[in-house]
Image 1 (tube, rainbow, N blue to C red):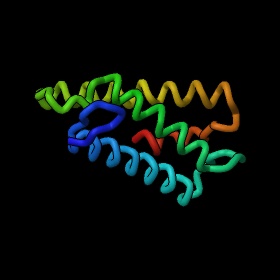
Image 2: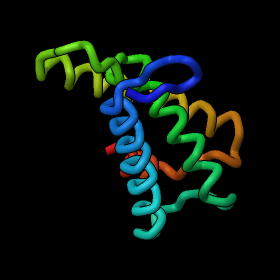
Image 3: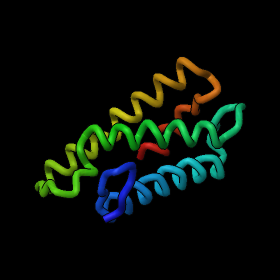
Length: 112
């Protein structure tokens, strides 16, 4: 248990968040190295906003609740809803701010 802002957070939750961030950053960098169009602006602000939106979507779908035990179907449904919600937020933010916009193929590859 880690103490974070006067709250105790299980180590498994911290490891899950760090793992999710590493997977999202790795997927984005992989899309950039494969040559998919990721936009004209710098890459790292896009990576940070996409990571924040997807982690927020996963948090809202309650995937980081360490005390919940769920079946595989429910876990898959929650994961799909979290990714689709976070991806939709990131796409809307990219539409509103062209600096944070990804190309279609890069965005699909990152989400898959």
